[in-house]
Image (cartoon, rainbow, N blue to C red; front, side, top):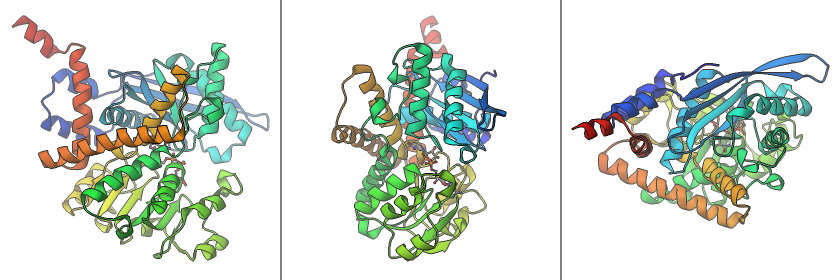
Length: 433
Ligand code: NAD
């Protein structure tokens, strides 16, 4: 078990720049430079053929000054301690940007879930919870879904926790199926929140949905719900991609039948929507992953993984606006290159906060036993993300900074305020004066 790992140089250099704009105590800088707690666990899983495989997992609780820590569990072959630490840092900032009473955490298991049977995946999910059981709880740290982990996985995890505890503790995990205490509106929350932010930006710029052509990288949970809702709202979705390929139709694609086709087999490994029948059905043209990113569109939505745009491809990006649904999809160097080229970036710590906002609502419902309609949940989501977005837009304008810097200023200021209320060196110096 290791302690206090630092965030990667990229995230570190960005937070240093934020401190140049904010007058915060040195204590705050030091505390935000590394994670409060980090655990690496081994998860032995009996495979269907009788052999044993041991998977590596992590849980990093970055900062809990503003409340119990909150963050998803990623299942991916590239998961590492460094990636989980960066993601937990971004969760800390995000929860503060939208003013939730949570700190930030993240978990992950280094696995290719497409290689596992359903039962193997269930045994792995339950094993992960047995390994981190003592570290989590409704007032301590609350996991949720992330890449490749969905409501079903959260249901297994919540059930494993309940079995160990010998009582029901639904508020320990969010993103559960509705029948197990999940919230109405959770599955679509990230996509819906992202669309809200885009709509608010578009109306400030006097642009109507019909004027904006959108390409979406990452047609998974968040990307699909965003594309579906954006299509309904009148935006033109001209391109979609997943890890297997990309499709383009300048007349516009309807995301719904494409998603249905992709899910037909219910097997992750068979979720290739860009096969002959769909391409014919949608008259879409197959393009490469790189071509999708470099399309001449108004809005490029990044809803896959980190580092989709780096200093190699930044100068070839033609979109005027980037909507970051994924966490960390633009590297810091690329961020600067895009800013120099006049590209507006609507940043991840604001744009993808819809998921954690509805996770908070699920946590509140689990704790009170009072469950709300989808309409109520959506209204609360829209209000919270709308308020945070307007505050970021106003701050960016007032201080002449990027929207990312404005969002970080909002978040770090709240965390710094909470830390100084706990008693920083400044407080003790003031007392001794
Ligand atoms: P998901 O696993 O459902 O979807 C990810 C999608 O990205 C998959 O369709 C995958 O095939 C695709 N993909 C992977 N590599 C790609 C590539 N190189 N090019 C194109 N597509 C590629 O995951 P998700 O839950 O939709 O999460 C997507 C991103 O959004 C992640 O960065 C995640 O951290 C972030 N996010 C998700 C939520 C949420 O509630 N789901 C909340 C906040 C942030």
